[in-house]
Amino acid sequence: MPSSPLAVLADTFGYPAFRPGQRDVVEHVVAGGDALVLMPTGGGKSLCYQVPSLVRAGTGIVVSPLIALMEDQVAALTQAGVRAAALNSALDADTARRVERDLVAGNLDLLYVAPERLCTPRCLDLLDRASLALFAIDEAHCVSQWGHDFRPEYLQLSLLHERYPDVPRIALTATADPTTRTEIIERLGLDRARVFVSSFDRPNIRYAIADKADARTQLLDFIRAEHAGDAGIVYCLSRRKVDETAAWLAARGVCALPYHAGMDTAERSRNQARFQREDGVVIVATIAFGMGIDKPDVRFVAHLDLPKSIEGYYQETGRAGRDGAPADAWMAYGLADVVQQRRLIEQSEGSADYKRVSTAKLDALLGLCETAGCRRVRLLDYFGEASAPCGNCDTCLAPPETCDASTLAQKALSAIYRTGQRFGAVHLIDVLRGKAGERVERWGHERLTVFGVGADVDEATWRNVFRQLVALGFAAVDHEGHGALKLTEAARGVLRGDTPVAMRRDVARPRPPRAKRIAIDGTPLDAAAEARLARLRAWRLDAARTQGVPAYVIFHDRTLAEIARAAPSTPGALATIAGVGAAKLERYGASIVAMMVDGA
Figure 1 (cartoon, rainbow, N blue to C red):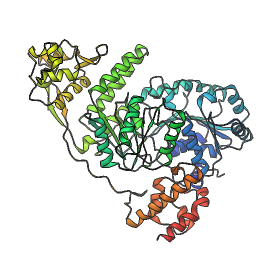
Figure 2: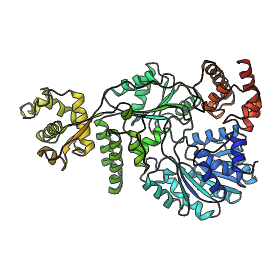
Figure 3: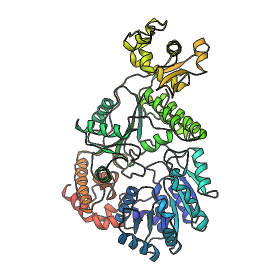
Figure 4: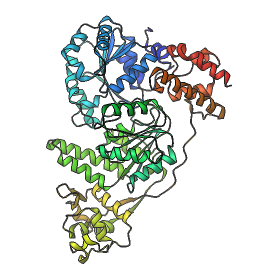
């Protein structure tokens, strides 16, 4: 095995140089130092512990929360010629014992283990008898009790520091605000660890948040217009909505499959396997799906319901475009989402501190949704990173107008007050627009002074007004009143005319067309290269099916695109392409070169 990090990177993984931020982490861990690494999804976190595991003596132990992630990582490493294995509940007894023997005998470069298994006496005894290169704690944000993916078993991992003080530890996550970083350090005993923070920016992802009207139809229009035939993930809050949305999309020609914890285990596994191994599959899921999903060519992530926090939104949208090619993060958002999330916080069994922190996180997400400025600037600012307007989000591409909405706000707040602060936005809009239906007349609200004062304003505008009043803190959701709106103390200044209210007004503009597929160096592929790429993708799919692995563990799309552009006619030329390591060159080189020569 090569002894230097750069040699391992080139010979095993096929990359000539580290990405920004990787080299410093790798060299620090190789030297025996502890590290906390914050790096965006798709930024190359895995190499930060895989390379040191191959350079240092012994086996790298990787703590990973999901079986699917372990299987993907082991398959990809095996393709690269690395001796990798996993210990998890999916293994039969004989296989598990063989993995254990290989660990103790020093026959493994990397071993993936779930946190709950790692902390068992049996596993700890195995580790005591093995030579250990390092511990890597992946998805380290799971240790945070304030986070969106809290896993109690992660709290036990502090024992690694106590039991194996001389073995370096590296904790990695793509999602951690400053508070969560501090909690990771405290709970994992990483007080002496060096903290590496890369940019959280994912410039290839285009962020867009739409006013929710008919969310499913809006989603279908988005998929048909920009992502027909692409792989994507659609997140919904409830299992029922997942099932209904997947069936609705499938009936309209989208290859959509459901995924949630309430499904039959076998069916859920089949759907996940299809998503990972086939092209163009759309998974509709609760947040139970996705953490650690290693599929690089997910072209879009859509939300039909508001996430709980910016961390959750960033983590989930980060599953798009891991290969660096253009991808979309699209969300439909409305007042009902705010009502629903605030109700979930209030009805939770969490402590007062938990509810306070959760409310603050939701407020920060509402600020992202309602901003009239660049969404990327707002998103990165949350993680403590300054940036300039990106030119690649909906508010940059079609800047919303900001208008003086003081009069509209006064009318809306007056309607809340005059109706007794007992009704939701739908009823209040009927009152303001002068719609004297049965419900309005039952309460005598057609006789109120606010009845009809907003008849000249359409329903969509009023919906935006009430949503922004809640986001701005002038109105609040009464959690015991089934979504009724009530006034906050801040509303007094608006009603008196002392507090002006500015609101955003969206301007509908066509989205610019997507760029053509690009190669790894940014060069668009010509027609001949596109034809070669099609042949390569068909070959890769056939090879993946034969081996029973996801296509992307053989070669990523970006590597195939570069092969298609360069059309290497010799194994030596193929070896110069990023992503083609020694093991893959030996295994696939002749077939690829033959395809390039025959198709020239």
